[in-house]
Length: 214
Image (cartoon, rainbow, N blue to C red; front, top):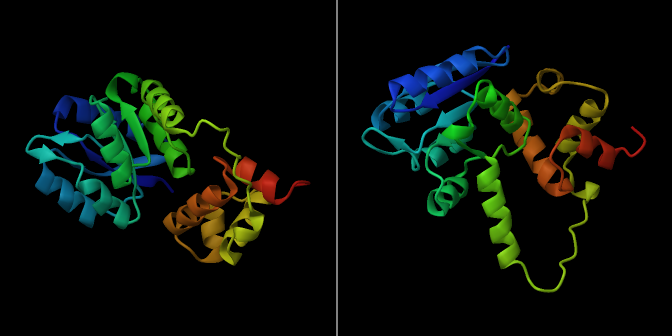
């Protein structure tokens, strides 16, 4: 079963290209498309979608206010835009976007690949943006070396432990959702929480920390 995607993009040519990339992937399908703010809001509120690909500027206004709306409905959001200025990057991430990809980096297959990283709990970000974020963090960091956070398996909830135990046995997201009678989006929510507590970015790292001998 494929994950449904909402695509917000005001340029019809670009939108068709993004849709083709998504539809070419066996993992994703497009549930709705929109090029203006009103249509975008309707798509977010009515489409049963797990993820969204959002341009930041639609033909009649900014899509930034729509990011928290989508996140509140359980969607993960990948920003796909030409805008690379710090202000928009920080605004989008603060609003809840889980990834930030520049259109110049969206070569064939890159959009679907980035969506895959996003739904697995990762944060796909264009290299130039990631470099600037790292540089900014270094500038803000205290001069004395900071102690690295210690992953704390004890902080995991019972549900998170159930999920990570199933991952350790090789279960997929869909299988975990079926076995625990949850939606896939709910499983992803628990996984993102688990990643934050363990300070990891993948299922493999999480399983290794929770079950060193697994």
